[in-house]
Length: 130
Image: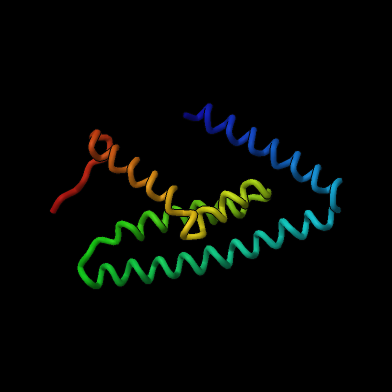
């Protein structure tokens, strides 16, 4: 798993650098720098907005005595999206925005839920019952 993650990080970094150089030559270096700063600021605002909204929905669910399962998976996706957005690069920013926008976050959230449920069924994750 570590090797796959290491290769993925190296490959994504190389693609990001190539994209920076290509866009810098095609458009302008200042345009690329402005784009990096703008996507970072927009991503920070969107992450804060989506995170606050998800937290309010989770509180509402707990007020009614229900477990906030959907909100937990939304929160994980928002956290991953925000972390990815803070890394400089347009490819990673695209993935971060996909995780921050509710309509495009849904397939990744469903995949994460299926993964966790499969781990619970397999027995690699223990469920605590009261």
